[in-house]
Length: 130
Image (cartoon, rainbow, N blue to C red; front, side, top):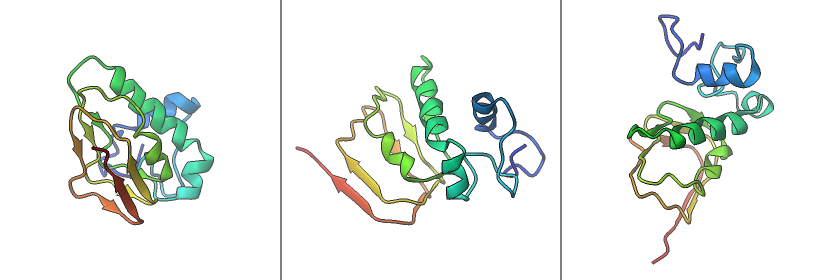
């Protein structure tokens, strides 16, 4: 189980990581692929694919639930999200840590994009088209 939950329960991302690899996956501190701060380990463990699969799965869900990445620790893979078609779904990146430069260019989100209490530790570049 991911160390993010003190009670030993699974985090919302764990099932996705285990399904992807057919085994429990955690870093040396016990954090899952989405909560680990070990960027090198994340990249070597297929984080980009897991992130994209998780997000696509939530986009395809016909319910009105947001695409919820709240609490995730993200690397440059976050920039692969922007070209995706979220339709009217909200993309929730609340309480995230982003350890990479973030480039918002050509982002189209009919829903909302939420970054409440998110820390971006590198440059942020926003290019808006009129």
